[in-house]
Amino acid sequence: MSIGDWLEERAGFKKYLKYKLNLLIPDHVTFFYCFGGISLTIIILQLLTGISMLFFYIPKPEDAFNSILRLSNEIPLGWLMRNMHRWGATILISTLLTHMANVFYHRAFQRPRELNWLSGFTMLFVIMLFSITGSILPWNWRAYWLLTLWTDYIGTWPVVGEALKLPILRYFTVGRSFVIHILLLPILSVVLLTFHFKMVKRHGISGPF
Image 1 (cartoon, rainbow, N blue to C red):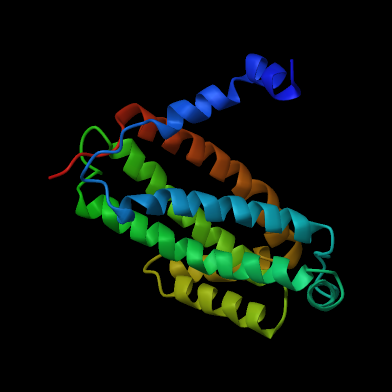
Image 2: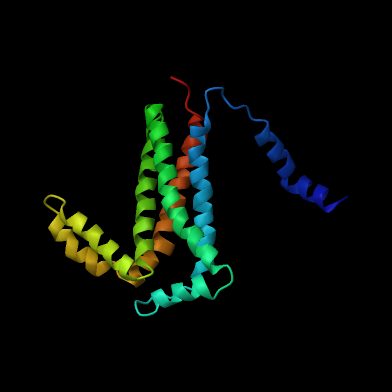
């Protein structure tokens, strides 16, 4: 018995792949239905490139930018890791917005898919928090002004804006943003995505109008 046959007998990878490839796709499904899967692919790439950069990034205000420069200029393929991660963050927000616009257009947020919509909508906010905390980490002039702009925007919120502005500026230091970015948000993402995909599997692809 070959290693492949031995592994197939115990894991059933080929059988599972054959089953997935033979699933029927409804006629009304178009390219725009793929943006959920495209977003998941980018999230996985963000995870892989983020883990790679963890070995070189130093989450201290005085060392953060220099560690990014070293990653980009001295580490083999470091420039590729960083640029994939940076551009992936921007593209991810675009694909998620396209996915949600498609869901909204096809009214797939209606009964019984309300929880699909709510979990996906919450995931969009989590991704935006990823983007904000990730932009702070290099701690260069761009990171400083992005943080300033975000807090100025929050300061415009009625009633609570001014009260939140100063605490946010004090809290989102490089070290805390780093912990939120690599620990808290990934845990929250795993929970949300697991729930979201369970709901998608439960209710299936939304039908045509």
